[in-house]
Image (cartoon, rainbow, N blue to C red; front, side, top):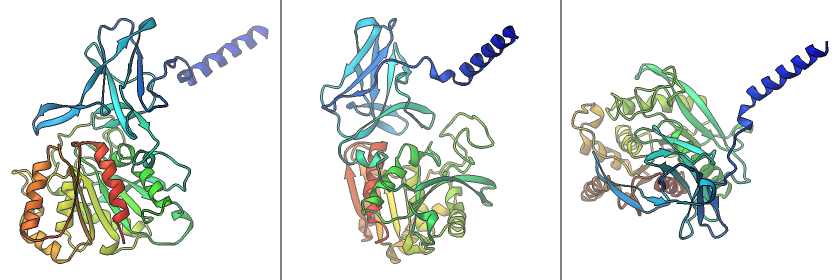
Length: 398
């Protein structure tokens, strides 16, 4: 009996260790460490390494040649090896409040910080992240002690695209307890993104909670769609299983998503307490999402009164022959004749799409179409898009 009790105890201990194996083996290093003066220290244990660097968007950018031309990419900084094989780097000056991403490069091999459990996926790349608070806009990205909205993953059927598809829906604090109706913002991601992009990389739910709590933005429903016509949902979260994320999809920016968009609006109006009219609808997006927002809003000029183009692609590919992209000038004339309440264009001054946006604004100027323009520093980066969203939301539904 005693032998049986010991055996039972051993089995129980082994089972507990297997069930909770993540309790063991965590790193004793603190990295990143945000110092009192807002400098940041990075550390990694790599006793056999010859070279260790850190790369991230907190560092000065460098130029890289891409199919889109020269673009800004994060720079690098060298870590110094210290005691017991621990490499360390401290930024030479304080870092401004913001959400940052970074990785280590150990002997040429990129890796995330093993001491930092906080990571975010952007397309097929996962990076470590940290947040320096203390001022806006970064304090808008934090989970603060304010009333919180609800974030849901919602499936709908798209006859146009021939499949069930998923989107992320934010409802403001108090939605479940009342019968009030709300305006709706449709918020679209860029190429390689999905319905998770704005809530994860863009911190959209935190921005909404905080701006609504401050009285700076009107309580609203926000619908974050999946703009990839060939996908049901984010990678790993559809019937395709654990497929590798990619930007190379057959129906990317071919007009099919724009054609299907009224199905999304109809679903939201049917299943949520919306104010179902143009005056209480907005659409905005970044990069490909800005492209979609531009073409959807001109294709359906009675659907949206507020339009936001964040670092938007403008013109379709030459091989994209969808009717959505035909008669651009005529459709823009029809859209602006209906006097949208806000047509907002924002872009960074080193963005690879800067010239395309400049050319588009020139066309709007020649036609005397009214719009609001916001130019910032920086390139095609989430730091800008979070700021643009923070500025765009308070202007809606006035």
